Amino acid sequence: MFSAVTALGLIRLPDVYTRTHAASKSSTLGVLSILLGTFVHFWFNEGIFNTQMVIAIAFLFITQPVAGHLIGRAAYMTGIKVAEETVRDDMGPAIEKRKNNQQEELENE
Image (cartoon, rainbow, N blue to C red; front, side, top):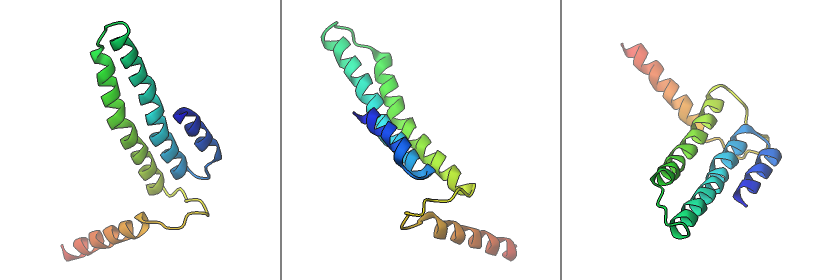
């Protein structure tokens, strides 16, 4: 179900930022659900506790959302525009403020 939502989001959403959100959040849940189901199956039905599966679940749970965030941030920093439907840009003022602070520090030196 989560993987289907991911595929639908990648096709239907208008810009890289919303697509990244769909790909990182729902695909993480989809892959984790599959891995967790496999882990539970082998543990309860076969009596095999797979430590590598637990490590894979933890690794994906931590790294996939962070990777999605970094891809979105890199897209923003390179100047890729947001969709026209976007209501608010929270990063724009923060980046301008940071640039102004850096310029003031350079002038004071």
